[in-house]
Picture (cartoon, rainbow, N blue to C red):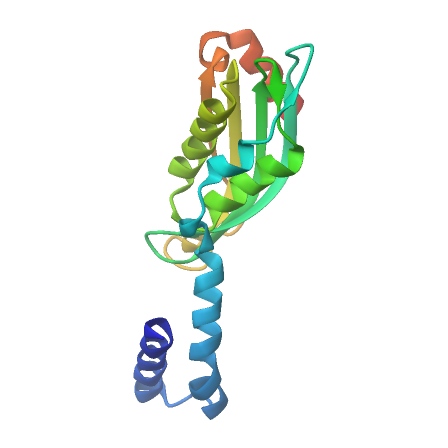
Length: 183
């Protein structure tokens, strides 16, 4: 209810200055915004490690790579969206998880007020810790609306961040291999 009331105040303030906000917006948008914010930040109530509890044994520890995972998040500095694609690669240590479980980890972190750099590291840390894998590599590429629709107004600008743990920090050849596979 507090979110709804806050948006009512924001809309009324905007309308008092411009007078251009319709009655429908004044009456219905605050409730839609409350529903939206509760959904967009629902990851705050989720422990991403929970999605990695169910594992499957594997006879070899060959590289697992899932890429082109689409995500949407909100910049914690401006409360504007940033969105893009994530690639996650890991070297198992005798066990793997389902591909959908990695997507759920991404979604849990994306549905929080975020910084791209932190989110990238949180995903890598969670997978590395929960799976006790030999190594994990995460690459994120995102467009930030706080850069494209306001501020510097640079549409199409992409920010790339990476996080590596375990063998990916120790072995440059392995890191080069996964980067080439992601491309």
